[in-house]
Image (tube, rainbow, N blue to C red):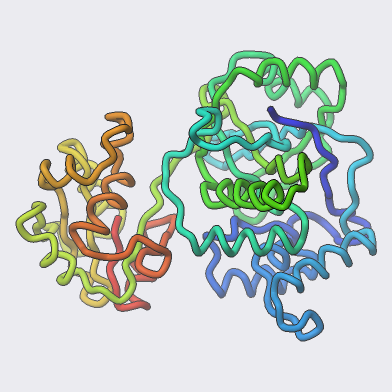
Amino acid sequence: MLAPFRALRPDPAVTGGLADLTSPPYDVLDDGTVADLEAASAWNVVHLILPRPDPDAGHDRFAAAAARLRSWRDTGALRPDPVPALYVYEEAAPNGHVQRGLVGALQLSPAEDGIVLPHEDTMAGPVADRLALYTAVGADLEPILLVTDGGGAASRAVAEADAAPPLVDVVLPDGLRHRLWALTDPDLLAAVADDLHPRTALIADGHHRYATYLQRQARHHAAGDGPGPWDYGLCLLVDSGRHGPDVHAIHRVVPGVPAATLVERAAGRARVRPLDLPSGSGPTEVLQALAGARAGGPAFVLVDGGTGARFLLSDLDPDLVAATLPGDRSAAWRSLDVTVLHHVVVPHLWSLRDDEHAVAFEHDADSAVRRAATTGGTAVL
């Protein structure tokens, strides 16, 4: 179920244009980018999603975010829309790719119900962090991204939204154009609800946020609070066949552990060899070589942050893979690089704890290599 809700949206008469108010997701921001966003506007959402400690809030950064959100509402910087709506949100990239979907309040269900399906495990640290923040502010600040098979009334409503003028139409400095429409017609909302009711959805991004939603719900139910807003979480639902996401790899970094150590630990249970590329080859060439190796099964490139040495890890011991991957999961899931990395390579090949302290995430190869260099570790592409 995707329920309408009354969104809080900036009032441009108070905050100015949206270009200075937006932020990438919290988990892709480095300290320099956070500082730039904070300086761009006192109302940039980064002040909420990655709050800093505030002496006036007892140096509690989550209390500071809650106080700031209350202030923004009290001063009219954020105003609730007059009636509940589902929102059609579009993101159009300069390369022509368009992602468009429905923003709404998703009725929560655990993975075992088979309605909202995860494909990644989560780590305790990020979930605890988001849970503390969302509990303090009493709001969902960033949606998760779900994909589903479309073709019904919901997909038609999304496709036809631009017949009306958008509530928002802005091009940000990165070249992405963002547009937003509100769907409020009761008959249309009922048709969308009927269409979505029997469908399942896959979490494309936001596993930790969804786990946060479920933990928050469990806390309220354990406290005897009964049904309430904690039974829902903010999401963007897209039709994978019509306006689906442009999917890219998310790379890993093992801080403080040089590539030579990881190569040594993998000896005898995987094939690891130096990646021989022409002088001057960069991440593009490295990823091309990795794509070729991937045809034989899960494969990874290790880049040493200190020396820049590159190694190709592939051909894992099939007995080890069979013994360590959950047997009740599909063959497709068991063949994913991300599955093999986190269930086999990190805990068993490298003997590392699979948590946020031992394994970090970066959304592009350059950033992963830079982070490996600054932490004396290894980028895992």
